[in-house]
Image 1 (cartoon, rainbow, N blue to C red):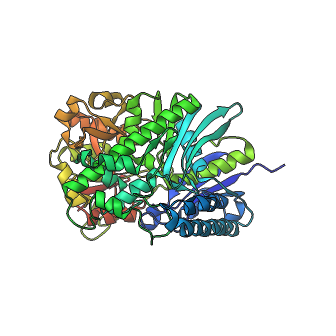
Image 2 (cartoon, one colour):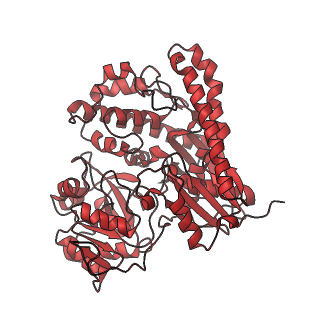
Image 3 (cartoon, one colour):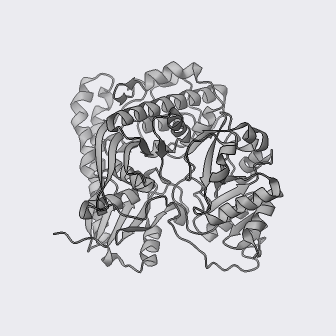
Length: 571
């Protein structure tokens, strides 16, 4: 009988968004994304800093790790080679059939090599290669706290799968079942299509899809609605991609992701040129089609599982407007997106799957948790921590922060454990008053250095959320775009995007006591229990994971100050 593993390390590494997670004695004790420790956004490096922190924080050495779990299975890629005959037979795909099959075979070999590399780094550990979509889905399920759910995973590519629907259920004794009951394989990929158009519109694929989602609110989908319907046909069992518009994927940067016909029917690649009406309209049509496909997939998940609760994960789950459409549809009583729905979160999912496979039990410590990374509560600053900066310790930090925000300051907050995922959840945030009508322009122009149409998310207390937002459920991880009330339009128009929505974060005191206190103190001064909450970084940089990164951000941006633990650092 295999002994119960005490220490399980889960990995996302060597692809993008590297991360590591540690389950110790059946409990998730930590998770960190490497980019926030090495300052390289979307890094594909082995997560050395994250592993060093995880082991050090738990007094472990590599020899004490029982199991390492990787977030891909090498054999899964070989399924693409079995599509070779089909693609050779079709004139629309014939030209790419051989390079496509060869590229998937190469990645299968590479994935096998990466798994062996983990085994060498942890010589006493057994290894597990976890199906990518299972890692996504198990993490989403475990973080939800639900007992019986449909799980929808939609991304660009996991081995050969791009979309899966699973039925997950907790079982007596602390276990669970996770059954993938339907799958869509590449080349049908919603994430691939969204990334392809993102790149065509002049932004970085795999990074700036959110920019296209924001731009969509300024456009009219009408001119390109037929194009998107032709490019992404909806079927009874899901969707497909039209290879005449989105050529079949080859795992190489040498192959374009949109066809000449797509360009003819839409517009030339934008590159770094000005954003024109045609770009806004194409973004709007892409976003509209994405929402339609996602709601269609949610309908199918409901029909296949008969579950009243839904978990959504994978990169496309970061499309908060599409998630909002699923919530608004009323198909499910509640919809949950984990704090890290992208590939970094599969480090938790891989560790969870490996632990479940060996013990029959679902690890604890995952439900409702997002503050899982390194903390720096013992940081000590000098009076002048950097040239031009002054550090003091206010007597009541939350009150002091609220007063500064009410007076119009834009302040970074760096407190407590590093949060998981791409959204600012309060511990690595930039906060500002939503009552300031010029704050969006100020934040985009002088703090974040990003496009002027990008919106900023609000954070509010759960108890007052319904005064400002129509969302019928909590949104602790800022993953759902909600329509707003008239009160929001009157009092805090800065957080209302052009499409009339806001990506709200709802907060209870127990989830983040300091941020809840700051909101309460701000409300005492202004009468408004809402703050703007955006991530502590500037465009092109990861969220600040260390004190040095936070001070760098203060110096490189238009921030007025950073509250670094209990230190008020100002220029």
